[in-house]
Length: 453
Ligand code: MV4
Image (cartoon, rainbow, N blue to C red; front, side):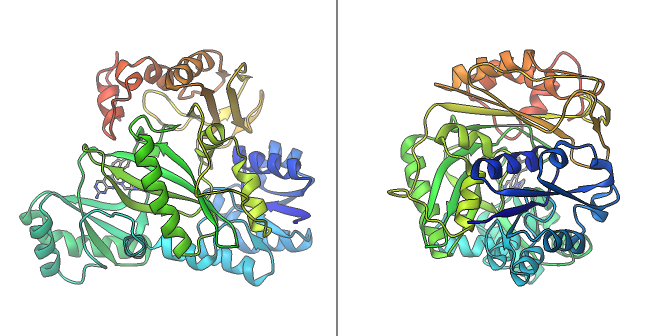
């Protein structure tokens, strides 16, 4: 087992990882930027190393600084959290070469899934349904036209090196497609350093559903059910829940078995998420795989009862997943609201000093945060300041607990998205489970004030 782990991240997720290490009796090393000197991850880690100036590029993305910190503190492993180096195959390779365990999948698998076109091909070959589209990268305008004709418009052109909504363009007709391929290729080359693009059938206002998996180093992969992540704004999730109100037990069993079989074939290790789009008939199609721990992992923890971060550490250290069958059973319902430091009307970031900070509690309430009264939210990083997570015996109980907890969450000094979540919890359409990826746009337009989303 590892004796000491370096946490290559900040904020709530750094604290979350430190908690798991403490539960396992593992020593921790924090790394921090000059803007994060007074952060709780620095305070609660056993050791802390400053790795540079405030900007992420100079600190949390300072590869040499992080590896040096790992070497001088003599850690056995690095947990990358989410964002930063979590899905960087080069970082994982450097760890592997430095004999430091990277708490995540093997670098080749990270690289494979980072190429969205290769990932689509690999998953299709392993038996996971994908949307109709190109078999590899598109090589010519002619090929794209022929394919689009065959599958029908609208289609979407995606950059292989994109993902998470970056480098996509919807094409409604043949006339539009003509200029699109070359433009998409040069845009992709400029933005990602790789010109490869591929084509898919475009689904209008789908739902976004993702399956959580974890694999050990002995060939065993299990799934932990799905998360409903449809409610997003500009490709940023706003709230997530598990189970999805639109997935039944039969679908969960069938899709779960399909993803577990596919990932066992790929020799997948550690935590991963398989993203699907759902069409109005309830069919699921693979779009992308994320090879990291996700922001929304707590809703899965609440319904399965396992500590995912602890499990990540244990499997990275070579322990077996002691589970019969291909999944863990789920119980009850969980919802997570992302509380962001932003203006709830314009969604502009709102950095600055938090003067009052009171977190809700009570039955079925969990708050993952690194904020505290009098702390300063720096402008350099992601605006997420807290995750409010609730569980209940069913969706209705979870929603009423969330509404209660939001009312008892007090943040003063900066603006937050709490009021947006309060409106969603009160919305009959949300309560009925009726929403798609266009939900927030429609919902905000129908609200008391007109807003741009
Ligand atoms: C799509 C799509 C429709 N059809 N692919 C956006 C994020 C990235 N993971 C994939 N995305 C989409 N891919 C096809 N073939 C619509 C989206 C999409 C979306 C997906 C999930 C949640 C919110 C979204 C908002 C806009 C577009």
